Image 1 (cartoon, rainbow, N blue to C red):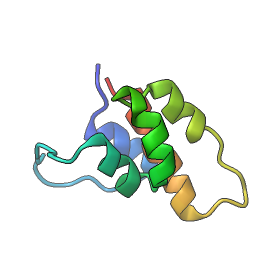
Image 2: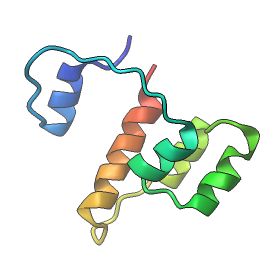
Image 3: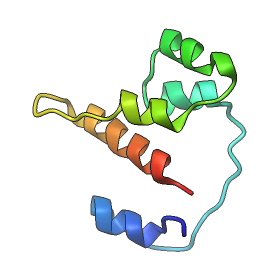
Image 4: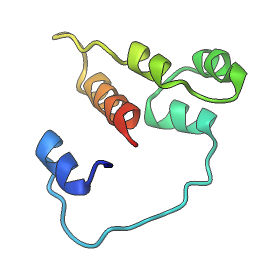
Amino acid sequence: MGMTLEDVQQLLGILVTGLTVFMEDKRDAKNLLMTMLCVSKDVVKAELSCGSVKLSWLEMYFREVNEGDTDVRVDHCALAYLLSRAD
């Protein structure tokens, strides 16, 4: 069973209203990692050398959130967690 918008609302406290919108994303994995998760170009190049992103890497790279982390880092960790748990 996959995660629903209602699940996201409960987990993150984000208000979800309106109709569901689906958009096929034409961007490649490299650009998604760099833009959505702010992963550096060098890290992306090394990680995508095999052609895909492993969930174990996603979990390892974004595993820890510390008190001193910025809100942006916490958001990236939350997004990576949701991505790693998607069915």
